[in-house]
Each structure stands twice: as C-alpha cells, then as structure tokens.
Length: 246
Image 1 (tube, rainbow, N blue to C red):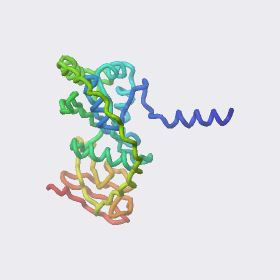
Image 2 (cartoon, rainbow, N blue to C red):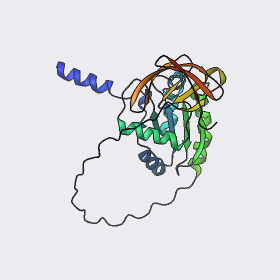
Image 3 (cartoon, rainbow, N blue to C red):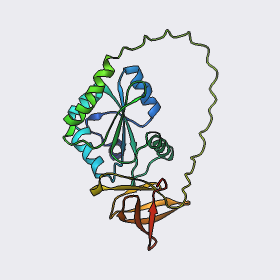
Image 4 (cartoon, helix red, strand yellow):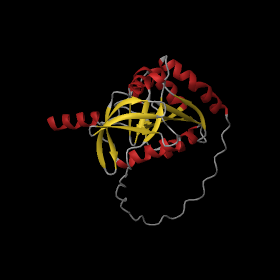
C-alpha cells in the first residue's frame, strides 16, 4: 500500500503546475499541426517560471483562472517555452526553447506570441494588468477572426500502402552547448525594471546568477544596468559589458 501511495505522489509531483487542467504543449510542430486541424490560434508563452516575478503573477492572475481555461479550450493551442534557472530541464527541450527564442526575437519575460492557424504572428503580448478578463480581451479579436476564416476541404486520403518494416535507430547523444566569453546579449524592460541577458542568464540589478562561459560556470553579480552596458562583478573583479550591436 505504501508503495502505491509513493508512486501516486511521484506522479502528481511530476505533472506541470498548471491550473484548470489546461494542456500546455512543449512540441511546437505538434502544436502548429493541432491548431491547423482544429482552426485555432497558437499561443507561445515564453517564461522564466522559477525566477521571473512578472511571469509568476501572469500565471496566477490570468493563466490559471477558470475563465481563461474555458476560453483557451475553445480557441487556443498553448505552448510553453520555459527558461528556468534552478530546476532541471532536458537538454533537447532547452535547445528547442532557445531556437524558438531566437526565431521570435524574445528579449524579455513574460512574452506571449500569438500565431494564427497558418503559423503567422498576429499579436505579441507582455504582462497584462487586469487578470484573465484583460488577457482574454487581447486574444478574443484574433480568435473571432480566425474562427470566421473558411477552412479548406479535407483532401481525400489515398489508399494506404504496405508498410515497410520499422528499423529502430537510437537517437544521437545530446549536443553540448559551448558558450564564449561573457557577453551582453540584450537589455530590456522599463527603466525601473531593466533586465539583461548575459550568455544564458537573465538577471536584474542586485541579482546573482551562474553563467556558462567557455565550458565552465562562473557566478556574476549585477551591480548596475546602464543605457547600453551593464556593470557586473565576476570572481571579485568589476567588469563592464557592452552590447555588441552598439
């Protein structure tokens, strides 16, 4: 009996902590296929789930509410691209999320990118004050336009051909990401809440983070975020990093 209870607890703890039993996908291609077949919008949610306070507020005030869940089930296919600092993530999923971040030029969190059923971006939303009703109002107009768009008739399926025997090929080993020296990638946010992206880490003034650089990790402390540079402390030394595009 204790064994079954332990298995049940492990299973529950392993599930995503999303309210209202909403389905949040992590496979972007599968989400696009599902949206096209069901004539729905895709919402890509870029978040730092275990460190970003605005992401946590958006989740608790809007995404976890029952009224958003009802709207999402009828109109949306949801995809989470998470960038945690403290919890583990499979390497391949981390690489897929980084590719989405690069494709859609994401520089701040939270960001919701709204795509129609053909995969074209129709809106981009940051943190929304006003909870679920305010977020739904920003999505509803696009959902109505999408619902009114006529769907192409389904093509007749060709007769199924005899299938060849399946040969299992083991997946390739995870590809290690090699980072260069410390580099300031981006500065985003309002002046009173500036966020910088240094190599693989996002942080604000007064925060400390582990940063991957040249196949090792260093601890940096963000002292000051300036207009086009940031002052950090690394291994006891003050360093100013400047945006490469400036």
